[in-house]
Length: 418
Image (cartoon, rainbow, N blue to C red; front, side, top):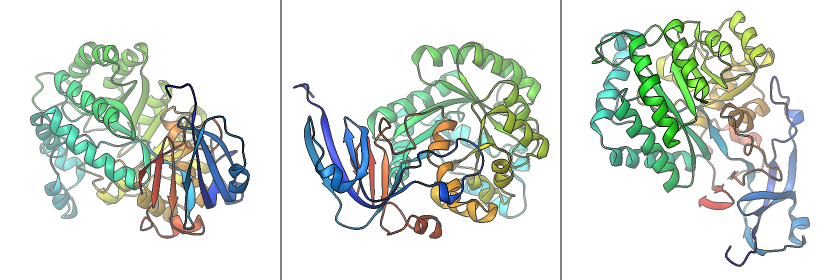
């Protein structure tokens, strides 16, 4: 504020408030470990949480600034804002034809080998201007915000040229700057070799490492690099030099790993990936290595639902001591639904996750997958990102399997959906 005072706001009361504080970073989480506060409030100062306590106590706390009050009249349950740690929501076009082929019996890999799949989205995204990409990305961000997602990772990877990938990353930055949600950009130029590239996959990755990554770093468009390790994309040997260059430039590494075949997670362990995502094909050997690595396992139930394939072994990952996050994988091909809460609730039912484990996987553990330690928990010093559900008990949220949506969303302490 221009007069030197701090902007303070009291928000509440909440019938229940789950702080997600004092919970383990890795492994199982019993529901008994949840810190549940009744008739609580949140005191926000300059967009950060100053204090979480009884609402009556906060009503009488001395304030050094201009105290506003955001009073809630109906019973609600408060959670940290959701973090979606893996999406592809910057794209153009649709892949409804692919879906019709898949449900008729054609596999994802068969469609990709025939020139469909990602290549179709590449053609449409290349043809779209940056402004068009910004407009559609903004629409998807608004929907995600209404569903409680206050931080969203967004990948490039649908142009697969130096110029096109820069266009995508610039669009992501522009939308991040223009609307309330935090968008965390990831450079996924290593999605697959484009069909019109006149060279080998290794030569394509070398070009991207030499020409694209330094530009991305120079403009500060992304601090993260992803690579798709799979038969239809890149082998571990092809990706190794690319990841070394990315690491040398200071990028955090994340990997599309073990979706259909294994091998990607081993490379992720080698390069100390901050997260390894998918893991549907991971076996005991891969899970044990993941547990030793300290990397966050980001599982993507939306892809399993869209492709009609088994879920990642979430229960086994947790029991092995892995940190588990659940993301939507919202993309035009394998996971067009994009409803993180619904997917998390369904995965929890199939994999027998506790309510605490599922909520941890879309809040503070998802933030950990993005190397963010300032959100996902409601306690002093964290970002004032939180959501309220119109119910009396937190157990109603997953019980309704995505049908119960937030009635209010706050970003940096400001109501942005109500």
